[in-house]
Image (cartoon, rainbow, N blue to C red; front, side, top):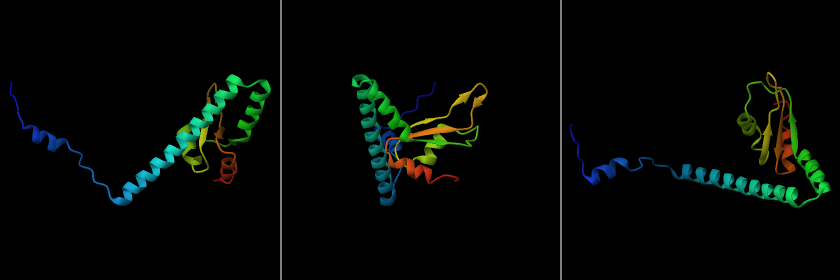
Length: 133
């Protein structure tokens, strides 16, 4: 058996992070982080609101909430059978905060359409502007 030894300083130097980022890259990462943080906050708020309606609301509140969800959703037709929820999220993420992407499945796989639900009402119009793209 051969034992190899190194000083602690050598090990520290060899394991230090070798990345260096420009100011522009750092600012880009900060902006991306802020955007993701805002999205997380919106999703948490929507989740708390949903949970509150489900646990404390009456049947009329649940119906109203269901209608609101439908109003914040779009139907996406002519969806490729190989498409993933991630692909659709990437396509519509600039429209608004996505709550859910649903690709209905049949016995033989995807049915060729999908639904995308948003947190914001305004996101629906932005998404509809992507029609035929």
